[in-house]
Image: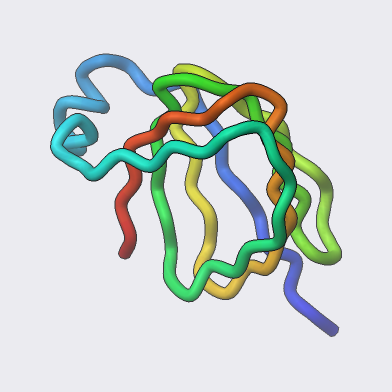
Length: 93
């Protein structure tokens, strides 16, 4: 049986963001679109702009947006649907 991959979403405090060093991470931007994606390693990201739905293969869709801290597990395959242009800080590992 395939393990269901969970996406973690939370609203971090400014202190948490500072402690994690989020604002020193690279930035990724993407226009409204839909595309498949696979995470070879864990990704943590913080959305500065946008609204997104991510549907993991064999799992439940998760929606998130501006101000959310999101963690994607290593090994997860999914489909991204971007409703509003995304701008996010991201970190692998």
